[in-house]
Picture 1 (spheres, helix red, strand yellow):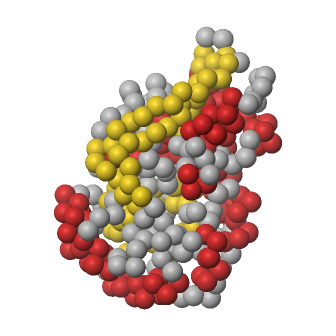
Picture 2 (cartoon, one colour):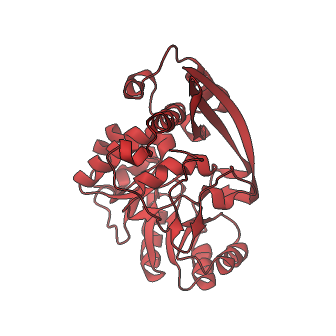
Amino acid sequence: MQITVTPETFKLAQAFTISRGSRTEARVLTVRIADGFISGRGECVPYARYGETLESVTAQIEGLSGPVARDALYDLLPAGAARNAVDCALWDLEAKKAGKRVWELAGLPAPGPEITAYTLSLDSPEKMREQAAQNAFRPLLKIKLGTPDDMPRLEAVRAGAPQSTIIVDANEGWSAEVYADLAPHLVRLGVALVEQPLPAGEDEALLGMERPVPVCADESAHDRASLSGLKDKYDVVNIKLDKTGGLTEALALKQAALAEGYKVMVGCMVGSSLAMAPATLVAQGAMVTDLDGPLLLAEDRDHALTFDDAGVHPPVAELWG
């Protein structure tokens, strides 16, 4: 078994801005695991918010020795980007060796398309209204916010896309006071969900706070071990494979979260169709699917995921799984 790690860059269609900064490209790592003449692929996006870099994640993966079994990964690598890429590459390899699709191996029903959010990056109210108007045909828009001056942006997006369902991602950018002030306006403007309004280390303030709009844990939720810290603060758990450390843990987290009464959102970092492909399996039946990474790119992989009026479709075997 041979594991190779390759950094790759995909240009974005336009600059993408959140409360922590802007980017014009997606920098990812592609992992290939070969067993004889058959190989599987996975992709991850190292994330500085969690102390990851392209170099540190590459070192984690290259530090694996000998044949690697997927059921042993949990003890070999922590939850994060490195384990995600290896786990997904092993799923792809297993499927190709068995001549089956990953969902068959996992005992899941055949997946179908899921409506996905389309993300509007943080900008001036005027620019965000333009973005919203250009994408008003989409049923679900996600707004990147997270500043003390977000009210005009909310109003602008709603004016630009009066019929779309809106979800808001504050990326830890609000204080408890800002969130409390905004909450009634979120209801008035028909916002369906708020992601991570407070910093992960300061979300105790959500305990006992009225939540007129469902609140989703993103930076506060990684894998099953983090579920206990969400109680009475959040209504929804955002599952991202780069946080869980792969499809294996993502499926387990989904099952555990639903069992504890949470609803589920399935999200992504900004990556290519290869990164989104495994997440389409987790997204089946989720409250919210947010797998728009490829829609933000100026270029994508061969055999890219299909996006149409029905949503994001599961991958073809030539891409993954």
